[in-house]
Length: 183
Image (tube, rainbow, N blue to C red):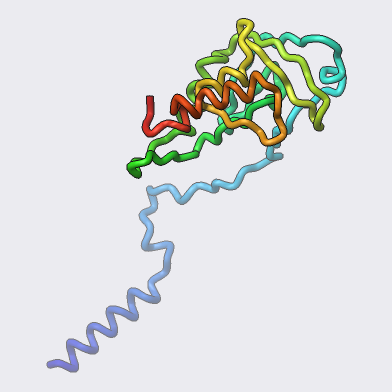
């Protein structure tokens, strides 16, 4: 009896193992879709115009916004701010008590609200390639505002008094990333 059951189990396993795959899928079910892209893959590159950066005086951009990666885009151009290092969007800050909070997301939202697709005016400092931009929205320096509110860090090589004072003010008052918790 045991031999019959064991033999029947082996026969069933062999039957299932060698059963053709086409018969195991119902005829009315669609097969898996092919997800491979056809055609070229688009790559977006920074648009840097040497003519734009070499202009004397100020350049006015009609629309400025913060890209998903945290960089400032104005009329199709990526701008690197002079005087401030933007906080990465995925940065996590920790309070003195050990509480963690999403300070990078807060910094991103603050910059996005400040720009809000409004026109900005920039002048360029040829200290690097591409040049750094000193930009303002409604006559307010963007880098200075971010430093003063604690949503940017002061670069090591920047010694301009206005930027240093704005950064020190945020440190003293415990604002933005220098604070213990979200505002």
